[in-house]
Image (cartoon, rainbow, N blue to C red):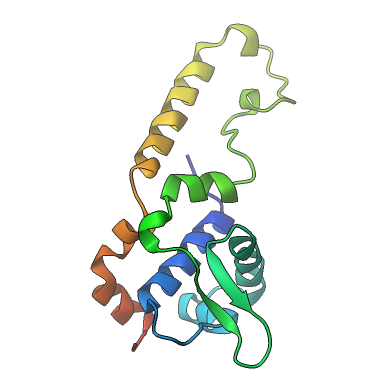
Amino acid sequence: MRLTLYTDYALRVLIYLGVRGDDGERATITEIAERYAISRNHVMKVVYQLGKLGYIETVRGKGGGLRMQMRPEDINVGVLVRQTEADMAIVECFSSSGRCRLAPDCRLQGMLKEALDAFMDVLDRYTLADILDNRQSLRQMLGVTT
């Protein structure tokens, strides 16, 4: 299983905001993009969806920015991955438009479904708080001084 960059960036945004904690100041899209050396436009798209999903608060204008809206212990990694991955069909036969001739009687399809379920079961056991367990080290690596 391979996650898209979109999901990777969503996790990174939440990690960054979680590392900052509730310092009273909001982070900016530019700040996050610079810390990770990734496209500001990509971060903007991710932030928009994370805001719509209720994970983060976004405030526009002067003094605006981003901060966590949910507590890290309430953000389940498996749920987030399902919400940010556009397509969990890891092979063609998983999609409704699959055209593989073997699909009606293929054993590989069941094995891959079992593997995907196991992957997601592991992610379901963790929250953002688990990722932030080494918060001080993450702060240093990201250059967060709060």
